[in-house]
Length: 273
Ligand code: MF3
Ligand code: CO
Image (cartoon, rainbow, N blue to C red; front, side, top):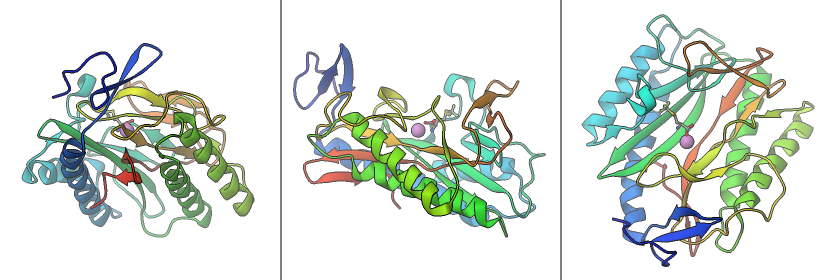
């Protein structure tokens, strides 16, 4: 347990009066177990996500996979959230609630976000899955977001600053847009976060901005890096269900996420299979 206070190295880092949880190597190994279960669940979901399958079926499969793996779904009951995954289809960006009447169709683009707790440690990751034959533009959007995620992860370096990650995500998004001849939107209202003994911890991690700001990145920190990109304007709207976030202009959106630890050797992705 991290019972230490007062910025003791090995327990807590402080940034403007807010605590950032620091994990020991053994604790990161424990987070890796939770992360692997999340990754396995997303692999199972990716294989099952086909035209004709409902997002409620995917949710049931995710809950089963997490529980069979000795974990607890962290989303279920989180501030009243009613499911074990977020399933965000097409113009839905994040926090889409799985539903029996949301049946996947050929050409859909679905982002699945999943979290699990094992032995008190959290893992959180998301993938975007193309259903059948999606448009080239939609595939490119998803590739751009995955590239932005990995550019962000590459900036998770000891001695760096938090917004080095934000800046890397933005730069990679811009580069992908130039290559693809389009201007991708970066969702600003949502972003990454610290993770460990809770799913959402300090610090908040924006997906754009100047580098060199925010807390210094030190070994033992763990962050969920999660860019959300839109094909059109990145302005968001929340649906009446109180959860689902959609693009205001109805354009398509994608979401990729990994939980990543900072180590002396650089980034350690915790949510790999
Ligand atoms: N993994 C999501 C994120 O970091 C959290 C989902 S919130 C829930 O944005 F309530 F849906 F669980
Ligand atoms: Co997250």
